[in-house]
Length: 381
Image 1 (cartoon, rainbow, N blue to C red):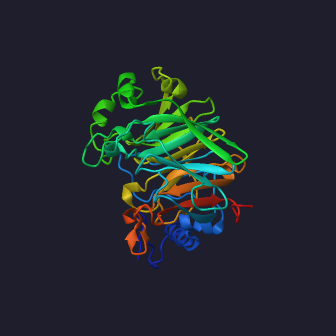
Image 2 (tube, rainbow, N blue to C red; image 1 turned 90 degrees about the vertical axis):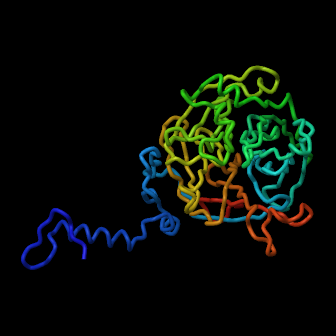
Image 3 (tube, helix red, strand yellow; image 1 turned 180 degrees about the horizontal axis):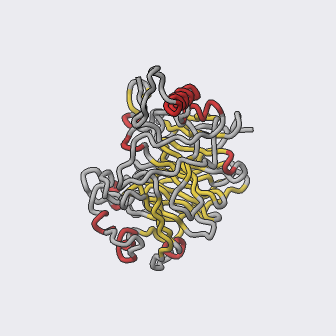
């Protein structure tokens, strides 16, 4: 029996009107199922609370007034690798995928064949030896016909420096009569962490010291998101470090010039209220940004947010992602825009024929998922 603190019962033993109303509201909320899953079932947004009470150093995300709701989910498997750690829609027909195991980039068709239609290894362009081949590519975005690609810049789990992980480079893309071309331009930039330390876009954050820690540690440098802006600059999204419970985005104003030899210029630095979680995937359509974060404290599903590019509090996007999904890349195609969100999942630990995908040989059928969130029943309509 529940008693309302501070209310006195009468002699009949019945609860006072306020307590009865409270019990009724609780029962009604339970019956309606006001959580993420019911939002998907009912097709209308609700205002859930954070699954875990945030610590004072980790401000809660804005779960109110959702801007977008995606009730329909489709999953498509693509072969060639186990993860889509980075990706970008090149046009309405093709998308580019990088992974965190090597320097191979693969082009896939949005519809049709599930295997790659093109593979290119950029190891020589990145000046990598075999031992440095793990580029840990984590972010891609498109500015005009130029693709910008960023690696994690993180040290390995053992704290080792890896040249392949400290890369920002660019490619030009074209497709004429079905002939796809990807050509690197300029020279890869490998001193981003040092440039950040010198510029200090986040006061009192020691980027040089952060870059000395493994990327899996809370304070270690780890970049996993990259997006263009309407003005043709880049926004770099950090998985870590988290500063005072806030997630970091930093503007890079002259990406093309950097690859042609100029010094980097940084613009606005944003510190977002995301409950102390870091960015895993990041992309923009017109003036709306979307990104995924990891599950809070490693529990539950990842979160998906929309952001206007200005406020400190992004808004929750409602979609019930599969429990075993690990979205690390986000694609938005030109004609469908925000009506479809395509997430690429890192499925390296998924079981295929009694083995994890990462344990399969390259010649075997490695695969990853493209998870399509849609506002309508058929994402290919």
